[in-house]
Image (cartoon, rainbow, N blue to C red; front, side, top):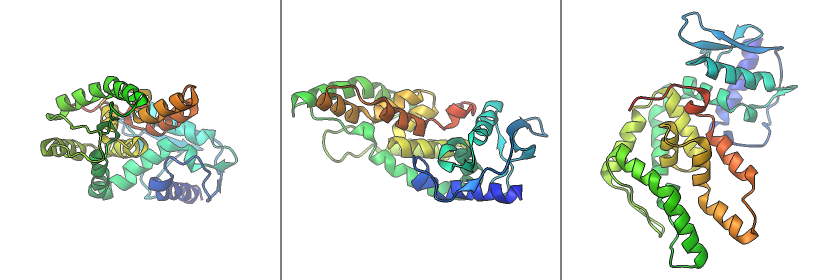
Length: 269
């Protein structure tokens, strides 16, 4: 019975993977909380950690034990399950969703995931800058972009061996050597980091910011702010008030459940 109910929750998490991953609305498929206590423990091999529900190991819809690489990761997922009240709310379980994606989806769909991510590099928000000659507000935004985004572009050039192109227009083509280097990096990610990249890219609408996040170059707060630079500037200019903290928090929260957040060890370059 426990396995069947966990499977229903897991299937809901994976089924809503793309459209619902960052949703703030409740799932239409409601499963009552069917356990008394969520916890975590060291796995039998002593090299990983498991999440438990009433002492039984949590499994994915494919019946794979949820083995986490660090104690912090297992504790974080256990906390998600423990925080559920009368019903299981998948939209409040981003780390569980990330784990099940890494364990069940990535091994079977690596190439399709990578193919789905690479177009974000072509339309990356970091490449598109405001024309400083258009208006005074445009000039101010351009200065803000220069201050915020130039260090990111500098890092990308250092990390991947070619400098990204930027534009004040509608289209820009990146150097082939840069695109190839980024794809090679993505293809070299393990299942955990690829699942984290997938979630971060879709939240930020930016491969470059997600890469900086995964490589520990920027924090979740920093990439969230960078991804909302133009929007934040416009809100502050037009409404003469700071950008609502909730808006930036929502973007940060969406990007947060990645390898860095749950304690997956940093990849070596």
